[in-house]
Length: 380
Ligand SMILES: Cc1cc2nc3c(=O)[nH]c(=O)nc-3n(C[C@H](O)[C@H](O)[C@H](O)COP(=O)(O)OP(=O)(O)OC[C@H]3O[C@@H](n4cnc5c(N)ncnc54)[C@H](O)[C@@H]3O)c2cc1C
Image (cartoon, rainbow, N blue to C red; front, side):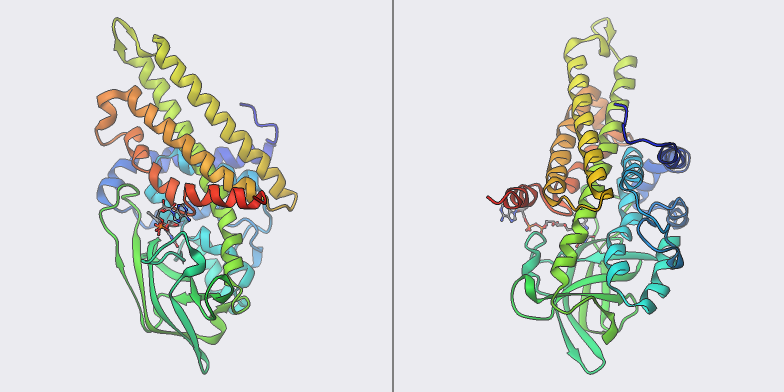
C-alpha cells in the first residue's frame, strides 16, 4: 500500500537500510544462526547506518533529530532480513538508549553514548528476573546506598545482548513494595560483584547472546543512579512504548518477508498440474496475508504521526504490540502451510521466522499483558 507519509528523505533512508541488509546480512543469516553468533563488526556496520541515533544529541554521537517513520523503516528492514537473532543483539543497545540519554549524568553520557552508537561497545537493558517479567512492579533485585556507592543484589534473566554488553541499564528496588520503590542504575560490566552466564538452546534468535546477570554485593558509584530515586518504574514504562512500537514495525517486516517468500515459492512450485499460486485456496491465503500486512502498516504509520506530533499514544502502542504479534502468528503459520514439507527444513526464512514468532508475542510485554494494558488505558 502506498505510504501517504513518505517523503524523499524517508524513502532514501529506507532504501539505504534495505540495500545494506540485502547485501551484508541476507546472504549470511543461515550460517550465523547455525553458528549461534555473528561477526562483531556487524554491530559497527549496522550502527553506522544511523538507526539508533534518533532523538540523541549530536554531541553524543546521535542524529540530533527524531522521526518515527524512519525508526519504523529501520525496524521493518531488520524484520525483513529474517535475521532476528542478529538484530536482537545489535538492537539491545536501542532499548537502553532512551533512559540513558534522558536520565544519566553528562559524564556517563559522554563516556557511553558515543561507544554504544558507534557499535564499538554493546549495551543491554535488565528488567526481567528469574521470578518474573510481566509484573515489573514486583521486581526483587535490590539496591541500597552505602556511602558514595550503591550496592546491588539480585539476578536478571533473559537479557538480550547481555554477554557482549559493556554497559547496562538495570532496574532495582530502592524503596518499599510496588512501582513506587524502583530505581534505574547504570552499571559497567566490570563493576565488582557483577557476573553473567549465557542462556543457551533458545527456540529462536539463535545468533543472539542472551544472558543471566548476577549482582552479588555489586558496587557502583552513587552518581550511577539514573534519574530520581524511586521513580524508575515510570521511566521503564515510557521506554517500553518505544520498544513495543519498534517490535511492531519489526513484525511488519517479518510478515512482508513471509509474504514475498510465499509468492515466489507458490509461483515456482507445481501441484496437480499447475503452479501452486493458481489454486484458489492458496490465492486466498495470500489475499488474507496482504490485508493483515496493510492493516499493520497503516496502524504503525498512524501512530508514527501521533508520536512525531509529540503524543505518546500508550493505548495504541499496546494494541500494536498484540495486534502485530497475533497477525504475525497467523501469517507465519500460513506461510509454513504454503511451503509444505520444504518449510519444515532448516535453512530458509519461513522456517526461521516461524520459530521467532513466539519471542515477539512474549518479549517486551506479552500479548496478555498488552491486552490488559489496553483495556486499563480505556478506563475499564
Ligand atoms: C529471547 C528473550 C529475550 C528477552 N530479552 C529481554 C531483555 O533484553 N531485557 C529484559 O528485561 N527482558 C527480556 N526478556 C524477558 C521478557 O520481556 C519476558 O519474558 C516477558 O516480559 C514475560 O515475562 P516472563 O517470561 O517472566 O513471564 P511471566 O511474567 O511469568 O508470565 C507467564 C505467562 O503468564 C501470562 N501472564 C502473566 N501475568 C498475567 C496476568 N495478570 N493475566 C494474564 N496472563 C498473565 C504472561 O502473559 C505469560 O504468557 C526476554 C525474553 C526472551 C524470551
